[in-house]
Amino acid sequence: MLGGCWRRIIGEMRDPAADVATGDPIADLLAAGVLSDVDEAEEAYLDQHLGEIVALAESSLSDEEFRRHPLVSLLLARGSRGWEDSLR
Image 1: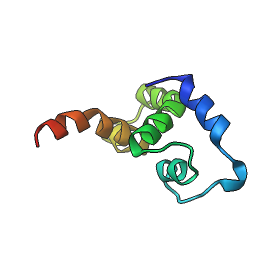
Image 2 (image 1 turned 90 degrees about the horizontal axis):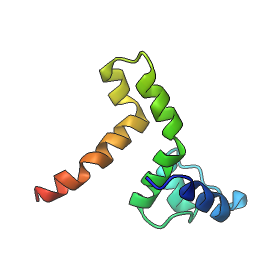
Image 3 (image 1 turned 45 degrees about the vertical axis):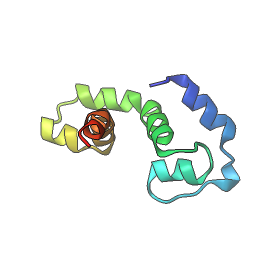
Image 4 (image 1 turned 90 degrees about the vertical axis):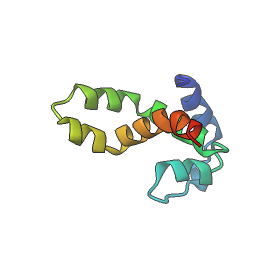
């Protein structure tokens, strides 16, 4: 992940008047014109929530509960995409 770079880009490009609320944070970033593709939006979203992911990993959640959390599910899905794409 690219660290604070995404937070700065999102902060500079986001126009509060143009905010769109779809209920999907990735779609919101794309609809607001903040980032141009899903991969960038997912990476930026995960980067913004890295502290929360670490807190989840350190929590008393069961492995199943941890893996079901939306942030962790997204992180795990992104981690396996390259491997899945190589099988095609």
